[in-house]
Image 1 (tube, helix red, strand yellow):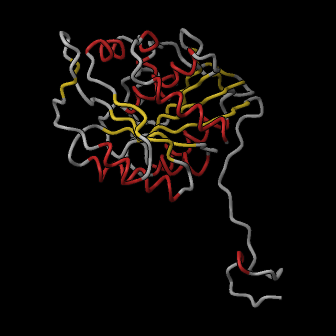
Image 2: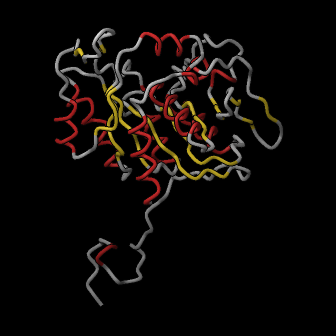
Image 3: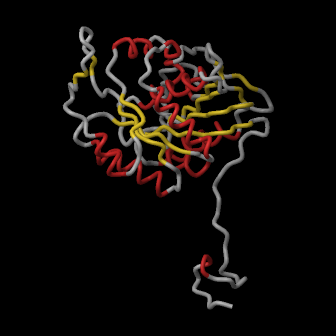
Length: 278
């Protein structure tokens, strides 16, 4: 028998010091059957994280998967507006039901529970974290192939709650082209690594403007460094999303499900392939 070092991974003794690693994972609602959970996060706000979440859900829905979005950005929920949803979530003794978008994407957001969508949420971190957990445990999601979780920016309470409470299969990090991108992406990647959650890759939003006459890519924010950043952290670059007036207009008008363009197709294919290997 090896000597006890108080490191249970190296000790064969069945002693009082041996403790199994505590799991904070919460069980989903008993009527929910969710196959894959993908988090979408960013190191800072204003980079288009919610739009990327919405587009991923739409693309996977177009590919025939049953998709859903959990809007975990509790203090800044924008998913319902993006999908043009104004009705409130309904439920009963068994639990809450997500609201379905026009194409059948299940959505749950705090804005679907508030009386007015512009009412501020002035809550402390633990309360917000509890709401996110309830979106997982108390919502009857039914059959979902891919759930996309729109996480708030940064590495604070709510992202930690998502990583600890939900069985996240991987995360997509959203960034924008700027000099601080290395530090910002690095914080998000390192948090995911600390939580033992695979980083599926990086999506760069507002990457370039396409010339309407010749199609040339114009890097109005300067030449992007995102590829170097991806190499630095050994993660793939999933997509470069151009600045498109129509895309912003569709998001503002609740018509994200009508977006056109193939700039996110490669990202969806790479995520799909990685998830099939798990």
